Length: 274
View 1 (tube, helix red, strand yellow):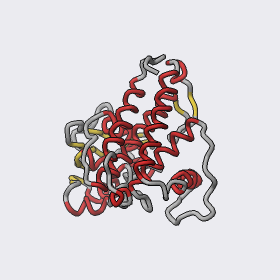
View 2 (view 1 turned 30 degrees about the vertical axis):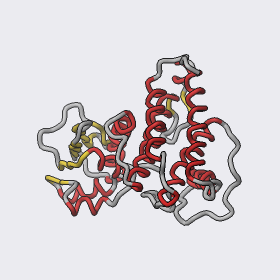
View 3 (view 1 turned 45 degrees about the vertical axis):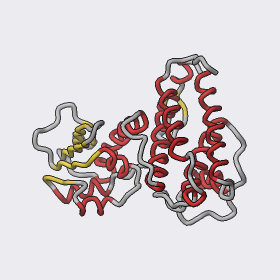
């Protein structure tokens, strides 16, 4: 379908990240498809299989049989459903799996372009709760970009940076930081945590605890309880749970100024993805 029934930016952004995944995987060798990635138990091919499974689920395609035995890294029913799609493709050559991703992403784009603007307003299920459909699709952009970067790091093909996927991912990670500070760390009333994220898409994110809740402050204090600084790639990797927070605290790629114990606790609690 060449024309779209809507002007939703999220559709073009989804297309951009799918194209970037394809570029990251085109021409990989048999050995490269088998390389391990930052997701426990998953190879490069498994990352692509996961993306296929999610999009086929959204399209309403029939799921593969449930697993007879779940790997130890499966944490919940959502993870088990993901793993079934992956297991069904573990003996399929990587280039064939990539071709399947291209086919299913084309189907998804056709479906999205056929939707009206009003359909994107409809509130429904997403991994982040009940949200408008466009917000669900923003979550998909984050997930796809996260797995694209897993693939790129595994095969040594950097790319896909400072574009829609990373911009959306940074925003979603930033939205999660009040939850990290307020719920996972639960510091005292009046605590203020300033995240300083460096890079082309960098920003400053002041999170303050007030009236028992942590929220992004419109009028941040000039003297935060702790300031935590890192680059934008690491901000996402920590939020996605793709790397060891303690290692980055120890090697200086994350710096903490002020209440060091609080800062280390916040950084260690940053992983929020399912």
